[in-house]
Each structure stands twice: as structure tokens, then as C-alpha cells.
Length: 176
Image (cartoon, rainbow, N blue to C red):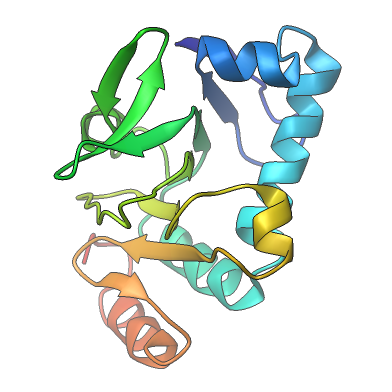
């Protein structure tokens, strides 16, 4: 796993990209131009193409004084019980990566296949997560959705958006 700090080159927030060796090779991420393109694509597919998610996530982040983003870019899978990501030859639990980065970033984006539709949790960070095997192409064809997880609220859907907005606003500047 290699960490790239992209500063605020592609958004107002600082962005750190945590990429597995497979993803570095597959997307040629040693090159800064490829890192930027990967970030642009990820932000588009995870945030910009989901306007209801973007509004609610930004509201959560501003009311909890959270900023910056981290992206986990790795191939994912499941052992039947846990969501795992490939880190070289080792498989590691996605939840462990979340726990290590929770609160250090306002948003965690999990660019990692979730074939077992595993659920995750966090105490502070908002998390954007695919609900099954992920690729930008699959999302474009509506074969996979990106879900927003907010601490102490849970997963957000179009149906619960107004409820979540009220929960965030009732406790400004406090983690809900």
C-alpha cells in the first residue's frame, strides 16, 4: 500500500490516495497526471454524479468541522464474513483501514469491490462505499450504487435523506 498526498490540486480539500501495488500498476499511478485523473474520476463517480449524497455529505462535514478526503484504491473481495482488500499478496479487512483513518479525514472513499455487500461503520468520518463489485463503467450503467454512511445515522438513501438532514442540523458542530 502506497500513500500519495495530492494536496488540494483537484479539490478544496486535501486528498490522500492509498493505492495497492495492483492498482498502481493497473492505473499507472506512479505518474502524477494519472493520480490526478484517478482522483477526478473517483470524485465524479462517488460524489459529483450523486447530488443528493453530495449535499448531505457536505452538510454533515460542515456541521462537524471535518475536512479532507482519503481514498482506498484496491481490489476487494470477501472471505464470506468480512470485506477485504488486496495489499500486495496480503488480504486485509476494509474495516481495519477505516478504523485507522476514521476522524483523520472528513470523508473516506472506498474504491474497492464489495462483492459481499458488506456493511461498514465509523465514529466520525463520512464514508462513500459501493454496494457490490465496483467500476466506473458499472456505475455508469447503474449496475452498482454508491452509498453514503454517516456516523450515528447509518446508511443514507433517497428515502431517508430528509430525516438525516434533520439529525445533522439538530446538533451543529457536534458529532451526532
